Structures are given as structure tokens and as C-alpha cells.
Length: 113
Image (cartoon, rainbow, N blue to C red; front, top):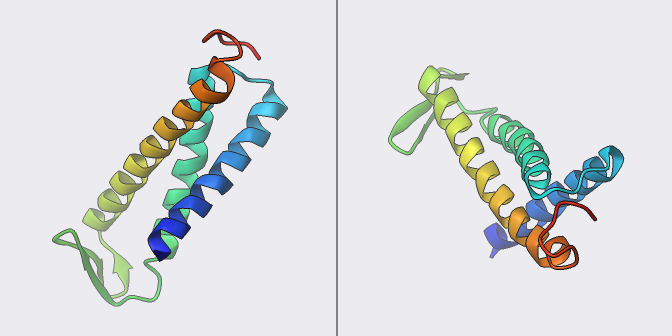
């Protein structure tokens, strides 16, 4: 239940930040929505991912030693970046779905609001 709530809050916050960026830059095309959401989600995922590793002296995740002697390993960096990119891609795909539902229908699938 906590994961579901956290995922919903994360998506809502990332979508809100993306919305403000899109409005400020006056962007409306579907690819622009996806690119902005991907960038916002990637930064958030990387920040939260690396922040979550603080305080561990040893940590294994997905059969990989992520933290060794209190420092993030090279494999840990790769794993965290891979997870962040995958999460950002998923959020971008969901955001694209919402774009088609909210904007794409009004404009006939066009690129302008």
C-alpha cells in the first residue's frame, strides 16, 4: 500500500513540475511532454536513489553490491542509473497517455493547444 501511495505522489509531483516547465516554455507537442517528463523524472529518480544509499556500510540489490565500506561501487552507480532511466521512461509513457487523453483529443491529435 505504501509503494502505491508513494508512486502516486511521485507521479503527481513529477507531472506538476513538468506542467510548470511546459507552461513556462509554451510547449505542447507530445514529444515535448515526454522529453520534459523524462528529464524531470530522471533527476528525481537519481536524486532519491542516491540519497537512499546514504548511511549504509554494505548493501546488495539485484545480486549486485551497491555499497561497500560505506561507498557506492561502480556497479552500484550503473544499477542506480539504470533503475532511474527505467523509472523515468515509465513515467514518460504514462504522461504520454495522459497527453493523448487530455490534449490530443481536443486538438485532433495535433501538436498545438
